[in-house]
Amino acid sequence: MLFLYNLLMIFAGFAIKVIALFNPKIKQFVTGRKTVFETLALKIKSSDQTIWFHAASLGEYEQGLPVVEKLKLEFPNYKLVLTFFSPSGFEVRKNNTVADVTVYLPIDTKENAKKFIQLVHPDYVFFIKYEYWPNYLNELKKLQISTYLISGIFRENQLFFKWYGGFYRKALDAFNHFFVQNSGSKELLARLGKTNVTVSGDTRFDRVVSILEKDNHLDFISEFKNNTLTIVVGSSWPKDENLLVNFINSSNNLKFIIAPHNIKSEQIQDLKNAISRKTVLFSEKENQNLSDYTVFIIDTIGILTKIYSEADIAYVGGGFGNPGVHNILEPATFGIPIVIGPNYSHFAEATALVHQEGCISISNQNELEDAFNLLINNEDERLEKGNICSTFVQMNKGATGKIVKFILNENTKNLQ
Image 1 (cartoon, helix red, strand yellow):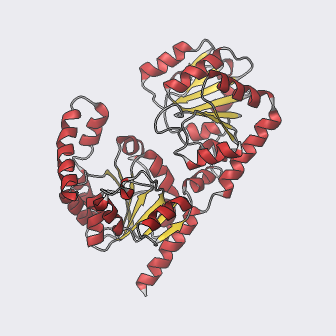
Image 2 (tube, rainbow, N blue to C red):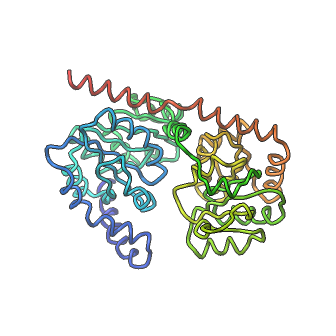
Image 3 (cartoon, rainbow, N blue to C red):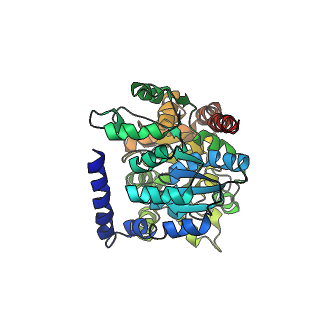
């Protein structure tokens, strides 16, 4: 099976280059990988000590960030190398300040894996949540490099647990330790004979808790809100927006801030045109009296977290698509009640908060209107659900400390 996998990787490499001629995102995927080895050779010396972190995309980067920041403090003489698989992660965070080197991860061929690891020569490697690349993992195991999975989550339908997934299961032998989010993942790994497992929880809780320590104030958001009850819509997709627009157009004495997942100009304009209330875009806000507007569309990226701090109610999008709802922990940490679509079962935090009634799941227009009207008209209900959300986040923090403590103990043992 590994032989077939390697053939598939070679074929995929060629196929992606062809697709890149017609697809801008895939073009970024291909173009960004052309200079990876040159960049590594330029920025990493043979005498450098390094730690390598791999994130599939932006969500995994944010998830692993607390561990990255903490280890940067604990290992100040090490260079930190960060890799992304997806353009949606790399293009947004390629200029981050936490890593010394940030590059795309080359396609998982034997040749790429050997060359990449030779250039980076890491002492420690951390894969965040998932993405198990057999050639990279096999090379790490061969070189006996300390490798860890953080905030991992395993499900019954993954290839590891299929009869034909032997080569994939073998790749897991590379991990010195698995830090997983829940006991179900630990039980599944036990079926594979893996006992080097700690249920540490999800490091995303630590990241969102740390947000509370920052200055989240934005003058222009306060000006727009003008002490009016405000619903913040984060990471919305067209299916979310179709329901939301109907509610917005029929509402009074409310304000709405919408931060769509996709900020392509034509989609932003379509959204604006569908709204009958007075609407302003972020890109148009200069020299405007923002308090005069009812709807504020955020056609930029990077400020949604701060905007949530001003919300009275949050709607988090993605729940009408696949795999489902986007990050609900950011609004939750601010103690805000949350409304989401029906597809959330793949996300433990969303499932838990729906069960605890801090989060309301809706499936259609009537349910959305009922949820919003409940939260708008009943302040006690709004505050209670918000308190459930913030308490949930606070009760689940601490994963970073468990992981870093383990790594430091292992490092001490190795030095003895």
